[in-house]
Length: 409
Ligand code: PLP
Image (cartoon, rainbow, N blue to C red; front, side, top):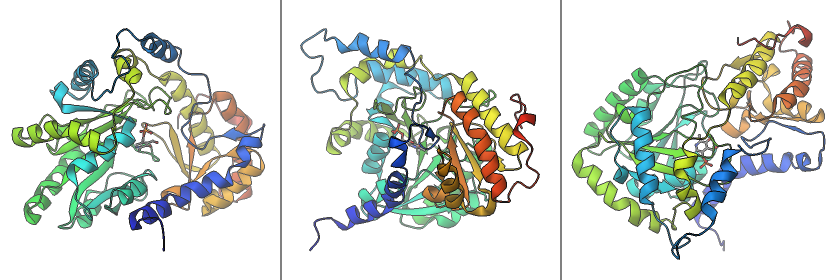
């Protein structure tokens, strides 16, 4: 007899690749020389405005200050107004459910839209938590590959993944791990496919646009949300990325204002009850009070750009195949020799920790988090280049001294 439900077993199995990676890099904790480029965690003290914003709200002003909170109206108003400005769509406060980060918003979306056993299409390579979340919700993940070289959205691959059981398609732009940002034309093409398939199957297919990196874009790149192309779109967002504080849980789920009125009203009315039903999935009171202040804060994009350019420039000059990120704080590359685990293990011997693509089911690739400091990057670069050369990948490896810090590829 087993204590765990079948869906718990499936979810646990889907996280195994992440937990075993945690296990492998346990050495990190004891390694005082470690250069950690694995997860998107902060490596510097918090943005100065963040503790100030939280401190300002931590002191209770009324007896209800720390009472149960659902989606606080002022927070919804600030989000609706900011989102309307960003996306050029008329969001109203009632379209917004405040959640515990993007994780919480996605759980709420699945609870609102899906029945047990429904299929949810996810991008590959894509974030490694989609599958466990879906299994835990008794849903069936269906992988749709991105274009293999460019990691562009492959609308035909999504079309092929659709069945009469498909309820949701998840898209992610800017994309983890590839750093790609998709244009409106991709969303328009996808919208056509989803509309057609919904009609064919007699069942609405919804789009969940996972946008936690929406504000983390390089070179002034524009942003289009599929919520502007396909009315049956829900957006999930997190403040954890732009504030570089993923431990302070805050995010939201937003309904596309283009949603037909009947469905918009139905979902608006369901957001509170389902937020309660999934386990009071609302952010803590202090985080909600701080939303007006937090909306104005961001990690330093100029510094992040310098880090991207330094690492991308040096690695490409050394002959590595790396995707130049348009957004997110990750760099995605092909491991020299084609064996990411071997490449990452060799780097670990030199105290440099990067994430093998096996976590994304891409055993030939690796991901580097740009949340590391510039000093960490400078220390790690010679090792990355030398280890790569040892794998025979970058045969034309240039000595690092020749690599200019102004390179942007
Ligand atoms: N979606 C993607 C693509 C992510 O990379 C992450 C976090 O890494 C999340 C959602 C969840 O974000 P949060 O932990 O801020 O809720």
